[in-house]
Image 1: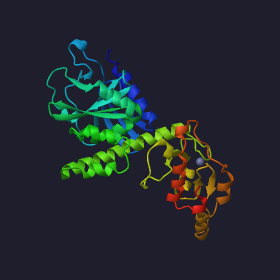
Image 2: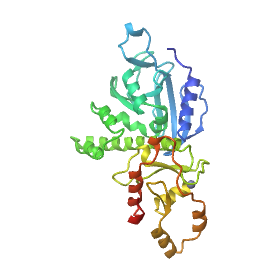
Image 3: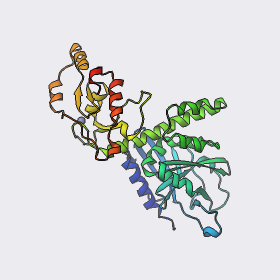
Image 4: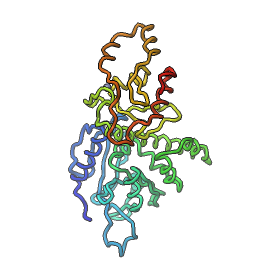
Length: 345
Ligand SMILES: [Zn+2]
């Protein structure tokens, strides 16, 4: 397939970033490569310099190229700028797989030929389409390079947190990334404890943190979409809705699976987290008599009647069954917030 013009590539890139909840603060000169922009996301602002091409089969076709290889052809660029405080992004969009792939600009300071190309395997792109992320280790002129492929919902995460993945340049790195997409309990700890050197421990800790941020970044869009961006308690939308964890993040049984999530407005999220408002496994909404007593003792009971008067009997749940809160999670969520035992049901 032929290359997509740069303005179209960058418009698609900006739209994907904005759908993830970020704001593009400045995007001047986006018609020419590289595009300079400031992205305001959940982790603050990121200044970016974006080089994008189309991922294609490359010239010569299957007779010349290895089967299953895809590539970007670096055109009209002599070097990639590396500056402190700026994120240089070198990537390609694959229309065939509907994912992005990103190479490590630190490994390409000097181009060996006039029109070099960077490769990735088709099965890695396919894996990213399926799992949201995949990495791939390839040789480069300046050591081994980790290529990172992500789907559009994870693009913002890659820009703000994904740089660390380019440092996982070991044979096991891609496998560890794969394991950390939805890790079994204890497996994060096992990955860290099986390091063979102090350096490796530091890298693995960083990888575990990066992949936690990846899972969290997937949780929010999935939960909000399932609840049509409205609070499960009061129905309010207004872009004031959070993806709340039913079993709190600090609890060992907490997950970033959709059935441990619920969309709640800021008010009801706070009330849920501090144990004033509860949701039973039957979806019934209840108030905590212990919490009310503590508020009365602290002289903080003002507003309770108004708060109570707008509460419906039960929460609204998503239409799809797998997106509904798991009853077990709702019970554990109440226990973790120290609800009186007779109300946990
Ligand atoms: Zn609400």
